[in-house]
Every structure is written in structure tokens, then in C-alpha cells.
Length: 133
Image (cartoon, rainbow, N blue to C red; front, side, top):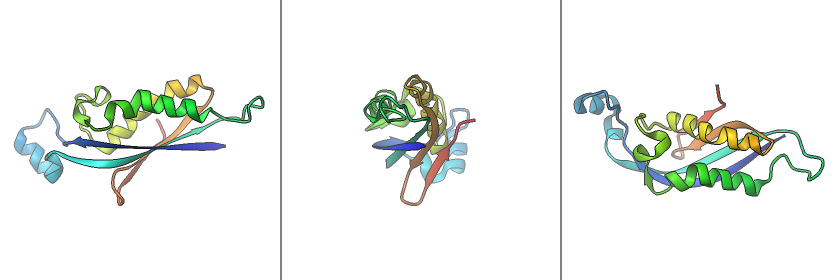
């Protein structure tokens, strides 16, 4: 059984690698080197066995709280480059998926479920999925 929770957040970022010069960053990242933002959709999919006591894999209120505490409260209406779990990283959505996984995996396991997938829709045309290592 799999359960997916959707959350939304809006954030700004600029793609840059601190090891590169401004010219190198502009050449590599093009328009995305400039400050811009997205209205993201985050999908957190968990899996596990149904608890016979309550009929659930995970309490969705608790899952919502973990996502809010660990991710959306930090990133919504903020500059992704300054968010603690994205510091000193190229703020691509690929890296964002991986870092969100790292933020959520352990807390979800404490609720008796297992994180299965992180999916982020960056635009209506671009989505990213991460299944862990």
C-alpha cells in the first residue's frame, strides 16, 4: 500500500555554483542564474503495512505535520539558496528532491512507515522524482 500527500510552496532561487566565476555560472545556468521563482507541488509517497489497530499505514495528520515542520515552513516564500538544508548546494530541483528526502526519511520511519518517493512539480512541464539511494 502507498499513500501520497501533496503540499504546495512558492520559493525563489538562482542556480549557481559557488566554485564558478560569474561568467561560468551564466554560461552553465543561463537564465536560471538570475533570480526567479516557482510555485512548486511536492508529493511525498510513503509505504508500509496497515496497522490492524487503526486501519492506517500512517496518520496523515502526523505526515502533514512532519512535512510542514521539516520542509514547507522553511522553504515556502523563502529564497531556497538560504534554506538550511540547501546551503552551499546548487539549488536545482534534483538536489531539492534529495535534500527533502533526507529531511523526511527518519521522521516518517518513527511513525512506522517508510518513505517511498519524493516528487516535485516545478512547472507544468517539469517534474522530478527521487526514490532514495
